[in-house]
Length: 578
Image 1: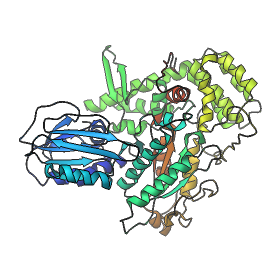
Image 2: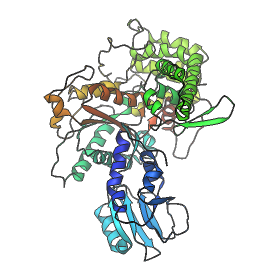
Image 3: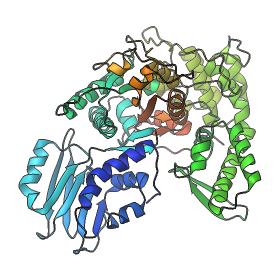
Image 4: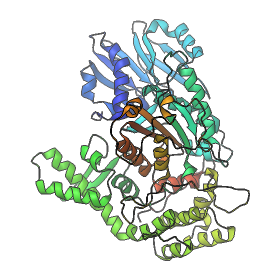
């Protein structure tokens, strides 16, 4: 198990588990064995240590799907989520079947003497519960719903775990879209329940895409059902649902803050950074919130990261662990800067000019093609050229068919034009068409904010966060799917960018939350915005979530795959940092 975390969502998840599973465990002094499936293993690993479980007399943790010897002298605790796999355990055989809206479980125990504690991560429908009561009651001592089917990725970042949700939602004629949206809604409700929030739901209205509206309706209905027995029912939080096509620029740009830069340019897999030490030996380090130096540096610009690390190394702490952490980040920052110096620095100016629509001096870019052309003529990687071409097209809100064909020839992706064309499935205009209307969102004026020349772009979602906190979201663009919480009706608006003194308004807003869910994935730069707005406002915590984290390369591959059949695959010949 990973070491524990005292941060935000992970702390809340561990608290909920302690209030249910651990509290039940404390009723018995007998040593226990905990049986987990892949999801619940990741869930527990994200929020607690093995020593935390040991202190509660849970001495063994086993994989639900692996054969094992029976441990008859221990009580068994099963913590699982619905899955299509079939497992055989010497004590218990659990067959779990998925249907579109309900899960059906049949349990047959091989030993009548064994009484188990059984916990599932989802809401248990009456039909299922009645069947379990009928066939399994004498074998189960405790059966509870935890209602926790999301994954706490970071303190303020959560994920709904739906396999291949991007393709299921955006692929033309997808047979799984309805089921995928329903599952996302279920998991969003468990996030709200864990946060102990009954939020008012709003969505971004879009004439080209209706997924945000559909999901908002599903979530609102499921929240009402979940809280129908709750007399308190007061809504303090607000949940905003938006689609990936709302801002196609942010996940494509080269971002120069530490976390986003590392995951874009370095081959970091499963949050594991692999590198070679000075003696040539292979090393690896986890980039997560157990590393407090990572937490401190991850949202800083790479220039600030390098300066901070240099200052820290001058002090040369005697503690080996601290020195090791600094060595890891010195190496990672060095790797990032190497890529920046080789290619990224020259790309960034063109990317920023195309994204912002003006140069460093604030002069409007009148001819975006003149900005793009040097990128096409330079021997950058194919992925980097595709990113630049997309930014050019986004800046124009679409281009002509003839012009697009020339661009595709320049980049030499005649056989892979789906990298660009398939963005239309996200509601993003690629080919200019009178019938395809898309209006760029009005941006907040940030001309007075201090920033780096190559980091002038601000993700659109940050504007949304700040507008929501200040109660400035236009109800025509962000309709209320449900009742607007009293705390968000405009009476307690605070500036998201100005310091303010505590007041009666702050007291009313104290502890309120803004939850944002992006259909189709979120970028690291958008994750950073949740922390920045929370830090600026203080009286409102921003939680951001999606089905997965995007890197520019992974998003481009997902976009290309939208036109592939269910069994088709393709290989990636080069990375964006080539």
